[in-house]
Structures are given as structure tokens and as C-alpha cells.
Length: 291
Image (cartoon, rainbow, N blue to C red; front, side):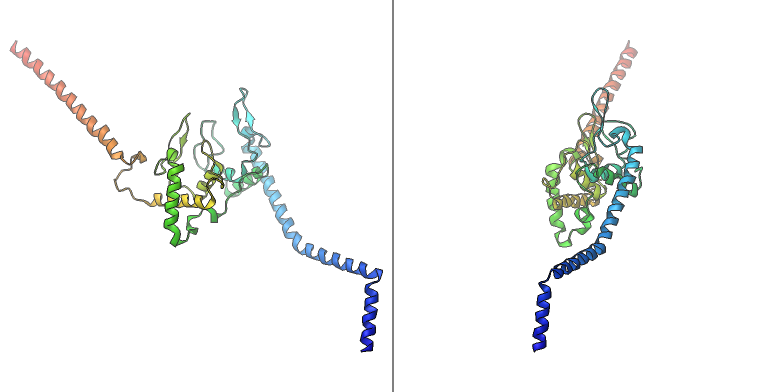
């Protein structure tokens, strides 16, 4: 017992000595350094990969985009002061993924609206361009599949999602995109494109970024879950049969009536004109024969 007490006393005296503090500090530094060495390399590799992706995107940008948008994404003005290519600072990665991923960019020639066409870049190149433009400022990032994929909606909540999405779509989208998503004309040469059979990710990105003359529906205006509900509703439109036969381009719920007026009534009027003209010719022949 006395030996234990003596040993404890010695340790207590050494613990209060000046060397003990230095030893404790060295142990703390060694432990911190070991933990950093174990965890930091993964983060450093991620930063290096992202920097390489941004650099690749910048090289692609200088070749295919800088002519209209400027070498640093600052935009280009014409001599008259109008906007030739808008600035891309703060547009975010999602805007690039939508515009380039749908083939709208690069544009074949300047116009009132960029039409959808065949995609020029690969998925890897699109990701690099998005990373570079995203590094120019703030802006929405490319959404995860969980946010927009209708397959992630629970089966027992599907009907609720479709009903809610239909209400949001009818309140905010039908004025431009038609009640069945077939699109329509817009002022100053623009148009609302057809949004049937469109990739759900691109629909989500369009709502998030507001391309061309479309309004921007941020997460504050329409929450992500409501955006997914709209996509679920549009999915049901893709699968819905046409009960009336021909859809006539989605002109409206009474498109058959339009055809009846244009074809049916127009045909009757034309037939009546033909009868009147034929009767007049017959009367002339009879008068000439009688004379």
C-alpha cells in the first residue's frame, strides 16, 4: 500500500512539472496530425478533381461559347447596345445542364428563341461546362434524381401527387404550355415548347432556372416536392390515351368543334356557292335557246 502511495505521489509531482505540459502538447499535435493525414487526402483529391473539371469546362467554353458570352462569361453587347449573348455569372450549373443538355445551346444562329435540337456535347463535356459556369458565381446546382424522378414517389401517394401537380400546372403553366402540355405561341416571335415526353430532369431545371421567356419558379415559389408533383402530372399526360381520336395538336377541349366549323360548315358554304353558280349557267343556256 505504501509503495502505491509513493508511486502515485511521484506521478503527481511529475504531472505538475514543466515537462509534462510539453509532452501533453506533443501528444495532442501527433493525434491531430494523424487524424488530418487520414481524412485530408480524400478532400484534397475531390478539390483536385473539381479543379480539373472546371479547367476542362473553361477550355470547352472558350471554343464553343465565348464568342457570344464573353471569355469570362460576362456577356457580349452589339454595337447598338443590345445583348448579343447574356452574362452567365450566377446562372448556375442547372441552367447550363438544361440549355446544353437539350441541344438549345450552342445556338446555330441568334434568334428570338433557342429551339431544341440534337445535343452537340457528351454528358462528360456538359458536366465540365456546367462546373465551369457554376464557378463563375452563385446559382442553382444540377438537381439530384431524388428531387425530380417520379419513380421515387411512393405508390400509395401517387394519386395525391398527380392531383396536386395538376392543380399547380393548371394555375401556373397552361397559359403558355397549353392545358395538355402541347405548347403554344408567345409574343415577339417566341413560343412555349411542347413539354410532353421531356426528361424529368430538364423539366425540373426549366422550372428552377426559367429559360428564355419562362418565369423562374424558385424553391421559394414552388417547393421541390411540388415540382416533382408537376412532373408526376405530366407523366400521366404522356400515358393518357386520346379518347376523341385525333388530338389536332391540342388546340383545346372542343377541337372537334373547330374542325366542324372549318371543314363542315365551310364545305356546306362552298357547296351552296357551287349550286348557285351552276343554276345561273343553266338559266343562261335556256334563255339563249329560247331566243
